[in-house]
Length: 611
Image (cartoon, rainbow, N blue to C red; front, side, top):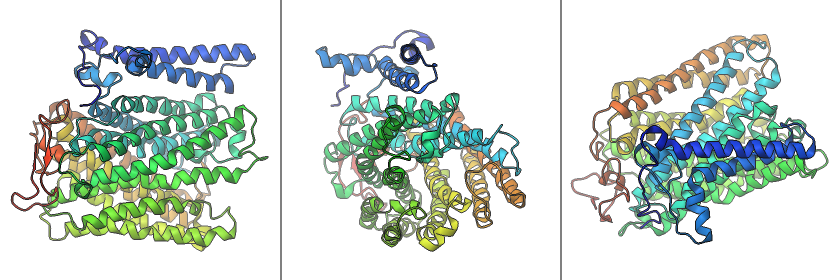
């Protein structure tokens, strides 16, 4: 049994205020911690409240107050001193507004946070595209404000949405259920993970209040040394988000290896669980690298060290950043591939093709992804690094192709049902193919020299991340919607939103390939007038894309409240999450499940799992 068993208490008090009391306490303690530390350090140093030391100290104090106030004080700290863990995990809506150790509650907390962050970062993107409707500055006061919006958009989308939405949301919710466990191995550590996500998001989101940062989401030195205090919040925010991912990775690995149901061998693991396991190994290896880089960079600014500034080694920052930053692409895409291979067999009513090859592909990507980072730096490194990293970058297309073989082989002659989740998966497969194909140009040194720092790179990157991962995330939101809500979504609105998202996305980002070939540089607020037409086209379709995302998410919100009851297994899936109630009960199963066959065989009475 999980360590929180028997600790579910009564609601903190009647009504909404009682349910929200822990969250309100967390916000109050966090605000008091930040303001008190900021004021005390500013007074001690005789500096202004928004100076570096006051803000950095305030972040640590505020984050500590936030985490402890939400319930970690009673759940995690007091037990260190002898008392047994005792905290109120609430009932109803109140469960989501406090420290909780049930993996399903934590998964929903991650999903809601990722969705809200996605919308906020998307709003920044809409402002950027509004600015780029014309060649001159119209929306932002100056290029610095545009750069601040760009940095917030990129940092949140990469570190707080793309890395978190599937891994933190679906990983937390479904990995224990899919392996037949009652919870994660370390429930209280899992509970802590989400509480570090919020300070990380807030640090980046609020960085413009103290000058923002001009480096974009990559934080390049030595430019970072010239930035305002907002650059410190970038480092602190990414570090906090990294801790959140690290805690989740530890739990996913331990739960998958040690808490599988009887009969569930590694050779029978669902594809989504395999994807989460491989992703978590990458997180465990590489998140500490980027965290170390953030600490060193912060030390350069507040302690006077010289790791990355002009007196140190600016190129070292790029190495440390991309040592994590390119495995990060696969930290983002491996879960998306897992969703492909989970959803396609269900809606094709056909056995998964090439299970072993797909697993081998994931393991191959995990290995090779650690040896390709320098292709982000072809224009800045010595010639001796060009050919080896061009080679490893192009080699990674081989194990990536295994996922395509498995997906297309399963689709071949299948009885395909084009429901909304399947539509999003097929769109993700198509979009990522374009992202992968255009990536070949950027992995080739001569071509990259011409295309580097143009909108061709922007288009390629978004075809990979939005086209691949975000479409797969939307597929997962719709696929598992009946399971985590117990209701059905509106199929008509779901399909309409899917086609609008697909049309808006492709019309926007295919245009960026054209702009890149025409000489449009990325990360600029003003550009040559001859590029005005193509930028206006991109912006208009970007607004359509933003509206379409809104429709897709609004459909889910309305359906969660008014949708028809779904039943336990509306899709006829065979993995374990479909063999329990919707939503699953506390502990996930009425009795421990036993796996007696293959999850992906759709012949009569084959591959049955029994609870």
